[in-house]
Image 1 (cartoon, one colour):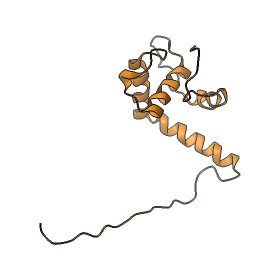
Image 2: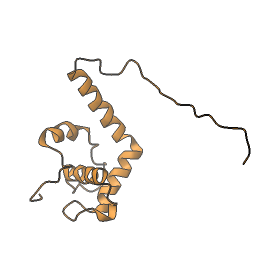
Image 3: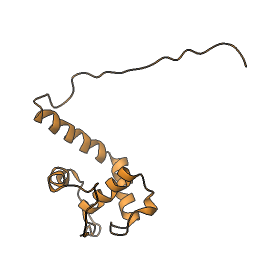
Image 4: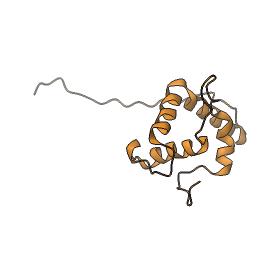
Length: 117
């Protein structure tokens, strides 16, 4: 564990909410050797700071490992499932329905001219 946490690191309460939403390790392969909380901390560090994957500080898991989880979870819908679950929890805590019943779509039209240059 790192000596000093980054501002983007998960709190214990946040980790408690996200831990059950992380997909289990694949069957038949090696046991998972990466600390999933540290993988999420690294992903959130990159997203919060906007740094390149190659610039990920050395006290996180290897950049290749972190990026592979990020990419896999993007493709398999894990991020979407996490967002859906967390949104429902927040809405229920606020005394609302778990899923929104309406949506607002805003659009803006821009006038153009038919004149040539």
